[in-house]
Image (cartoon, rainbow, N blue to C red):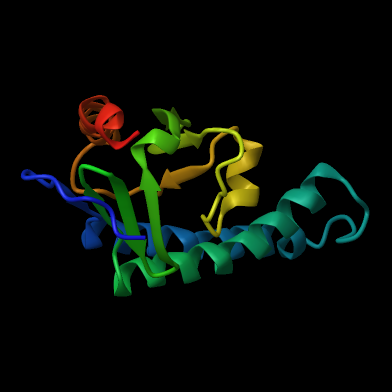
Length: 170
């Protein structure tokens, strides 16, 4: 789908230097997982305790996080706002979202980060490859971390464009 263009078409980009920090940080997860499971020789690695579960999660999540960070280093995500909606392009592919399909755009916050998220109207197909995980947090799409501008600034600009162009696009 090609979205109608706007005269002023803001483009936001992920910051490669921040992605380097994320990649380096992701290496710590499997190391921590190994340490939790095997370093002190105490306990079983299959006993189902919180410690065992946390160790295996850290051991498994680290490589996934590292692959994602490497993908973002090679092809950083780009968000483009247009009259018809917005486009997110990253190493996982491209997603075009029309303004009239968006219910809300917000900042999702956790202890360490803020992310731009959006929810789509019921019945609108969700094309994001992370749709299953996003649904656990009650949103349909998200911009990962490490952008050149703060998430709150991106959300403000997206909501400005949505308000400006949503009625025209309907």
